Figure 1 (spheres, helix red, strand yellow):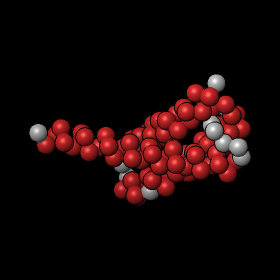
Figure 2 (tube, one colour):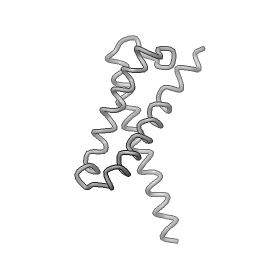
Figure 3 (cartoon, helix red, strand yellow):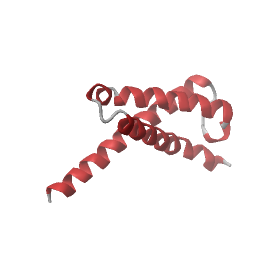
Figure 4 (cartoon, rainbow, N blue to C red):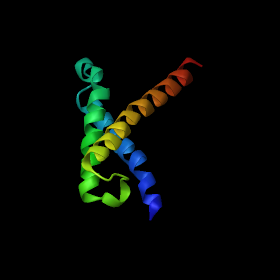
Length: 96
């Protein structure tokens, strides 16, 4: 069952990425929202870490809620990095 601990970061990052994408579409890429995406991703990730800690503890390698918040927040920020990778790769394809 140790392999379940490995899925928390990509699972939270994927969930945060999808939530951010839905918010971007819902808000029509509002410039005020776009500036705060990393902060929003961090907060959503931290909340997801706490939810996982209390409701699905087998997937998050945290011994207390503070560690769960840190893991979730880092996972949320990794969603921002993933967004930038996808954005840069699609920009490269458009320029060719």
